[in-house]
Image (cartoon, rainbow over all chains, first blue to last red; front, side):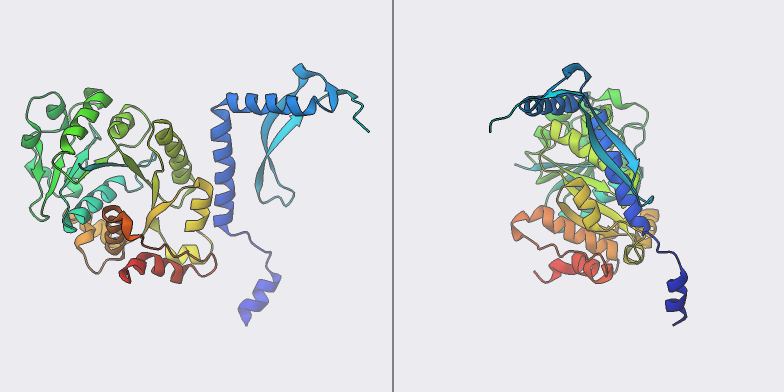
Length: 95
Length: 268
């Protein structure tokens, strides 16, 4: 009973194994992409192909990176594939 | 023709040598003819884990340099029928052996043995390349820690790029109590991150230290949990067609899941 009351006042705690699993995922993503810029270059080229159908953009300025940042809850870290695509003009599409 | 299995991990101290010794002893208990090769040149340890350190005459470097015949370097373990060891050299370094020499040795040994089990050194340099050169398949040992699992991921990638497909994971030193209260990654967490299959889970067990102190593989201890885990693992290696089902460790109540996993194939 005391436990129940104590737990009520205690801040919810993230299990340390979840912190471990999360940090591990981020590490591995970085290990894989840092070691091979070719993968990012391949992603970049594929993105160019698709975006090119819809917008005009500065190809040389297109950046693709993997970043990691603290998530909104402040407890976990997440990885994101971030593409910065400076658009010049949207193409007129069909219709 | 025998099969060549390399036991590797990347990170040191996760239990490669202990696993090699126990898998070797376990396979020989199942009636297989087994030779273990310690490829950790300069830091040999498999001999002491097996309690065979006083019987070394020739070593791996002597064999590849043809200073002796392969048969002369084989140390027979008197406690296990058909279990042999080729020890590493202690006063040389990794460059004393090349991958092509290892391939040649493995191909010669596979004519006479059912299994050749190679104990790989920690790291990803020359010693690792020697150890995996002749291998048909790989068992990657890891513990439920960020550092060990990260290294395992790297090793899995390197194995695959060297043409060793579908390495399997041996998760060592699981603490059921810690998994249960969420303070240790469970089997599913690790398997999800690494995206590989596992061949077994060995619980953290004081008996491992006791048996290593004596130079006796824990697999011979019928009461030890870790011994039982290794017996199950060797059955999975020796009889892949038996298809022993893996029962999942439930994230919430880890205890029962692990018991099922460890003792599961007794029913088969």
